[in-house]
Length: 330
Image (cartoon, rainbow, N blue to C red; front, side, top):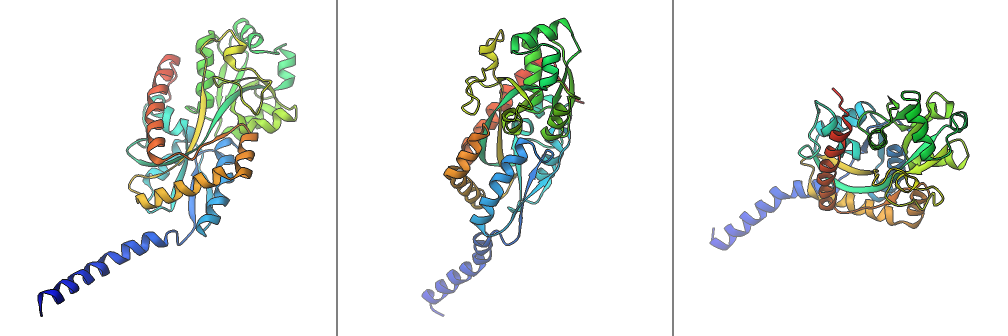
């Protein structure tokens, strides 16, 4: 056998050896893909995931299925994804809570928010909104942020503050407010925003620093009273509602939420990049973009590297907030 023939045989062998791996990546997905939402149905995390899933299903020709796994401020669902096979069939709709706050808030974490995940893309940023049950607001004569501060200072422990769970941005937005205003309100954590809002609507809770999309329909229907948004500037979705900082006197107050797709660490980069690209396309779709913006969300679709940098910066930011608030979960 001459040298040229041997070289061709070697090259052919290498091609055959590499073909299955290349084919496997090109063929992905060959079965339904799961997006774990670490909170109960109906909250903002769930709303965003359900808006995105049909678009990804159409793009890839396989169903992207939402799987709600609430508990421990998002840690239950996030930990499940961290332990899942890195094969491209499990993703997490992570939040500022699961990947920015919880690592400082919880004394024991079931996952590492950086080492155990591969960031895919930021889906959207969302301001929180301070909302009250209208009947309670009327009873306590609270019509503004200064009214709320005066009442809370005069009646420590009288007001009940609902949240979507310990360590969520909803919880920490409230804790930051309490710290900066010298007030005390009793915190009641729920297993997601939707059940918390349900009790707020029913009058079991007095107020909540909710993500804007999950409260927006109730604000527009007059079932919740919006006192202020937690972002540095007003929301285009609620232009007449002031920020907490401008409503005063809470100078420098700012706390916003974000939501993004992550995969288990080790998921093939090809899959990560394809999902990022299709997510960015979906978020740029005028119909999807308008739908999210009308609910107060700001669509993104950034690169995995950009999302990774955001996570790193948010972990540092919220570590300082948690320390200042004194909040801790065992």
